[in-house]
Image 1 (tube, rainbow, N blue to C red):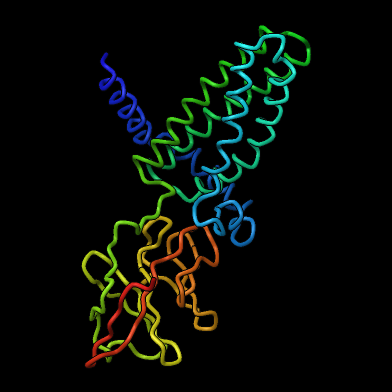
Image 2: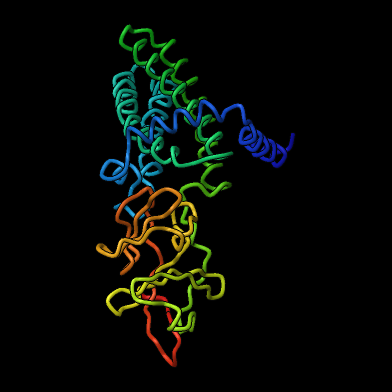
Length: 291
């Protein structure tokens, strides 16, 4: 098989995983359990990377992957000189996998359909890999270096499968990316709605080009932010607006955004919404992207 055909085959295999409906029952049950543990608020915000501006999980994955892979390299190349360093790296890799897995589970629990199915297999592959590295650590402590090395390589192989599926979810399925990125907001003043159509305390959806906008009038001021939720594309114009805090809650996964500046108040969203300046001119509400 050519290199191109091999890559196409891997992609097709990942797509087939996404079509395995038999995974729905166990995956949904686990996802609900994770949601109950994580809840909404502080822990959810922490694990989602709400304050970072992008998901936390991809940032954390570098640590266990880097340490565990380095341990296997030392096992193969450094032999006796690298034994202690390899053992320390395996222990660090296993410890760092705990918060990494927690962040990944929090993100995955908000997925559904093919993404949830592939994500479940991604998690299982990584858990198997970590289990093998844990077994490897036990063999190291007994002084059985050959078994430890073999188990470490098997663990890295399993984690490579998990890593491929993680990359498939991010780059082929768009999981965890800004779902409003492709919308091109107007940079010049653009009329989007008759002023009379937006009453005090009311919200409305407007469309300009390929961008959708949520408008809300509060105390005589008109707020405007992107209406496509950055987390998973949910329609913020169908969400609940809280007049007291001047925030809107996404109806899909309950991300909360400030209407005055599009900032994330609560996750799972981590990327702020586009924000617009507003004015009224000739009976029309006009907006332009706020820089």
